[in-house]
Amino acid sequence: MSETRRNTGEGDKTIRDLSRTMRKQDIAMVSTRHGDDIATRPMSNNQDVDWDGDTFFYTTADTTTVEDIKADPHVGVAYKDDEDGIYLALNGRAMLHTDRESLEAHWQDKLEQWFEGGVETDGLTLVQVHAHRAHYWIKGEEGELVLED
Figure 1 (cartoon, rainbow, N blue to C red):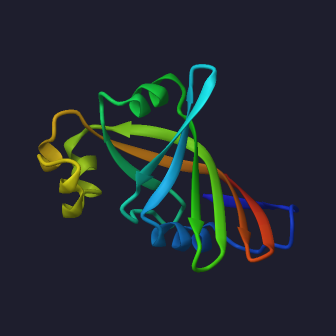
Figure 2: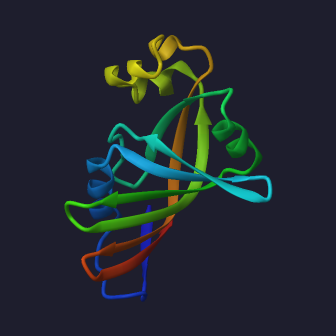
């Protein structure tokens, strides 16, 4: 993956830098297109973030989140880190995974508080968000990355 910095400030962060911030946060605000509207909900990423900015969330197939992504996979994900004064907004594409290999690859035991059946939970779905754009503000430093596959 390559990245291009847009001249939107003096920011010099890379996607690897931003991924470290994302990994520190458990809860992100995930926005989907819901018909003619936008739906935003808090979701736990369980601090499961790849170095290239992909982030992972679990839900079940019967949720509005999954319905929205099936209709339009473009999503937004927002993080806030009060400790370091960081705000991060991602735009990307969501992919839905229900195969056992994907479910197990990102599973953490602490998820059983929401999904008591573990990876055997009926309809368990892994949402992978692949970022295409990242905009950040860090203590007065602003920047934007455009990410390309």
